[in-house]
Image (cartoon, rainbow, N blue to C red; front, top):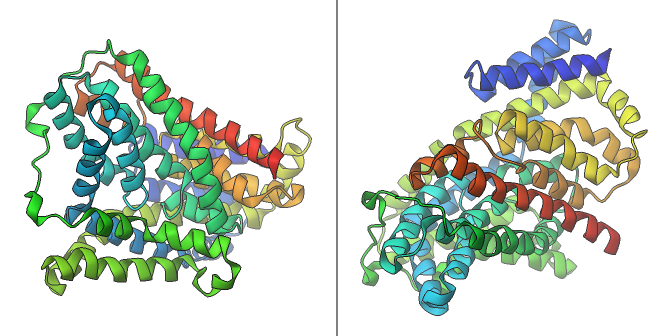
Length: 426
C-alpha cells in the first residue's frame, strides 16, 4: 500500500508540473504534504520533516551552487569563454571544427549552468555555421552534448553536487570518474552521431550570430583556462594527493576559485570591485529557483525516510534481479521521461534509491553518476532544453527528436555503460 502511495505522489508531481504548469518548488511542497498525510504522518510532524529535508539538502550545497554560479557568470561576462572558444577553433582548424566546439563546451560547461551555457554558446555556433557554410545541427550538437554531460554528470552542478552529499560520496573521485565517463559519452553523442544528421535543414536566425567582444579586451588563454578550471584542478589534486585534504571541502575550493577569478578576470581586467560584485549578484538571481527546487526535492525525500517507506521500497527493489547501479539509472530515467527536468529526476530518484544503496554497499561515487546519467535520458516535449534547441535552430518536432532527443539518449546510455564498466574495474 505504501509503495502505491509513493507512486501516486510521483504521478501527482508529474501532473502538477506538466499539466498544471505549477512551479516545481510549489509542486514538491504540495506533494510532500499530501504524501505525508497519506502515509499516516501527523501534520505537525510533516512540517518538521519538510524543514529538516530542505535544511539538510541545501546545507553546504547552497554555498557550492552559489559560488559555482558566480564563477560561471564571471567566466562568461569577462570574455574568458570567448577567448577559449576562439583559440580552440584556430587550433583545430575548419576540418575539426566540431571537435573544437565540443572541447569548448566541455571546458565552459564545467563552471557554467546549462541554460546559461546554452544561451552563451549558441550564437558562437551560428557564427561558425555562417562563416564556414556548414549544417547547423551537425556543427552544434557536439558542443551541446558537452554542456549536457557536464550538467548531468559533474559537480559542482546542482544535481550531481546534491547527490554527492546525499550518497556521502567523495566529490573529487566523483568528478574524476565522471570525466572518464563523460569523454566517450560526448564523443559518441556529439561528433560521431551528428555525422548522421548533415541532411537536417536548420535555418537559425542571423540575428543570433555572436557579437564578439574586441580581441584586445579579452583575457589571455592561460588565465581564461586557469580561472575556468581551477575548481576541477583543486578537486583532482585533493583526490590524487591525500596530503592536501585541508583543501578537500568543495566550498573552500570554490571560494578560492572565485577569489582567484575575481582578480584574474575582474580586477586585473580593469573592472571595479563594485562591477564584479554586481555580476555575482546577477548570478545568484539566476540560480535562486534552482536552490528552491533542490530544497523541495529534499523535503519529499525526508517524508519518504520518516515514513519508513524508503526502507520498504528498498526491500522490494532488493528482490529485483537488477544491479543497484542500473536500478538507480532506471528510476531516474523514468522520472526524467515523465517530468522533463534532469535536476528534479536525479534528486527524486535519490530519495527512493538511497536506502537500497546503503544496504547493498554500492560505490556511492558511481551511484551519483548512474543517477546523473539516468536523469538525462530522452529529453522530449516536456523539457525546456528540448524547446530551446528546437526554437534556436528553427527545427520541426520530428527533426528535434531525431537530433536532440537521440543525442540525450546516447549520452544517458553510454553513461550507464561507463558506470557499469568502472564498477567492474574498481
